[in-house]
Length: 503
Image 1 (tube, rainbow, N blue to C red):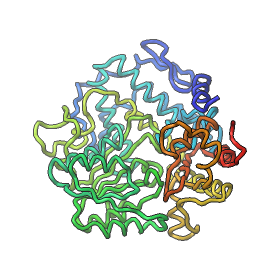
Image 2: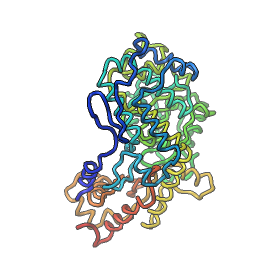
Image 3: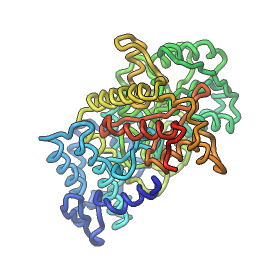
Image 4: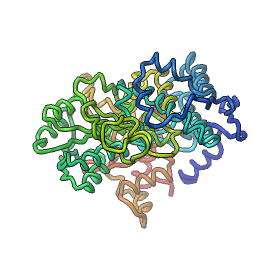
């Protein structure tokens, strides 16, 4: 059975997670608790518009608690269940109990690619389903009387998680929407004519800059990258005459953690705006924006990757001195008729009537990670990814892309990422099984090999070409354990073996 069919069979056979609609008036939580929508209080004093979002973000915690009721009963029921479940006996990282906290179906695939599109927490999925159900059951009451209060609540939750002022934060569908907002606004105002990016950065940023008519200076990064300051030095040597610098927090293909505060110090010294693409930043790296001595100008992030929200949740943070004049991608009721400083969150968060349920599920994620401990979870992810990468390299007699001696600055830096690339045996692309599989198939050698690993061996892992050699990029999260990587080791050995494979 192919990897895809195995996965689909697992989805059909084990779909017990999440919520089911019992009627038009109630939901049944996975625990069996019925959550009646009739208990939701829609009777707010007045209709709350997008333009009021800003004022709610400026309230102190005491003012918020005085003016705003707690989350609706169906949402509170999920939060209470989280406390009951996670409070006394927190699941251990890598345990079966921890795996069951995620929507990912592990029973019919070996999932090593969390870095691609993340993996949603069951609690966050449940909360999103409740919000969606509540919206569609009473659309006007939900949007006019409840939604903007809950968007303010969610913004406040996330601002505390990343240590920033809520009025500097806008909730968006994803990081791509964030860097489009920043770059398109800067280009329309003729602030950016020449931008610097690194060759290891996310490719769509270069596409956007090119389409906006910006002269792109792409700095080629030589491998291996042996020290974090190497990346800062590359920028330092090429920053002259540049209007914008864009770098990743963690590079997508290569998993390199970028020292963003050092980058910010350099760019601030030269009075050049710095945009951080933090698609792989939230939870995977320590992110405390107000604690930074040197702040970037802009930071965009995804919530669905390492933070594990449902798909469709991201954010844009903007430093105080860069807030004025930043235009939204979509102008709607939260914005004033003229371009001015009319409230950053109000202007950017509401872009029209759409499904905000994934964004409203951010609160479930902040609760989950705070209960488990952000630092503890991050340390486990980094440690597991490093140890798994070393194990693969040892079994294949190859090497890990990022390396360094433990206890040294470069060695400790190389270990601070939940993604690692491991070089595959050189003969894998000339093996009999690969050549038979590749015959007549479209795609790059890496894409063809990735499909072979998935369809024949049930291993979901991306294949990247770095320095001319094929690598697998493995990910690790709190549900990962060493035995998860054994099938990948054996699959590669079988493919490389001249007589191996599945026929």
